[in-house]
Length: 123
Image (cartoon, rainbow, N blue to C red; front, top):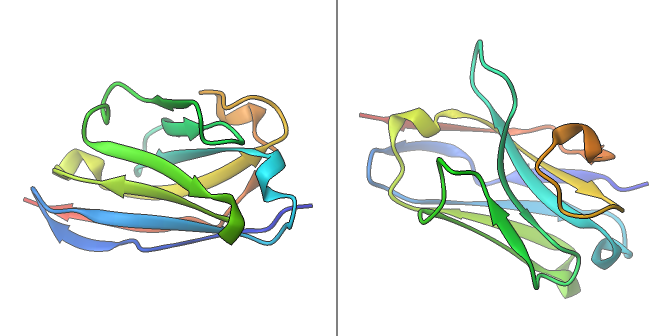
C-alpha cells in the first residue's frame, strides 16, 4: 500500500513556473513507477508525464513536452514535476500516481493515487 500526497499547486501567471511534489509513504517507493496526470473541469483525465522506478526513463504527453520535467529522489520517497512556461490550458487538478508496472500513459494502469493539487494559470 502506498499513500501519495501532492503539494506545490497554486495560482501563477502565464509564462511562470511551478514545481509539484509527490510524497510517498512507502519505503519501497523505489519499486514503483510514477506518473502525473491532470484533469480539467469537463475534460477527461490526461497523461502528463511518467518516470521509471530508477528515474532512467521518462515519458511526456505531447502538450507538455519541452516545458515540463518529471524527476524523483528515491532516497526522499518523493517525485517531482517541474512545470515551466505555463499556459492557461495547463489549468487543472494534477494527480500523481504509482504503479508496480511500467511507467505507462494510461491512467487505468496505476494502482495508487494522490488526492490532487490545483494548478491555475491566469492569462
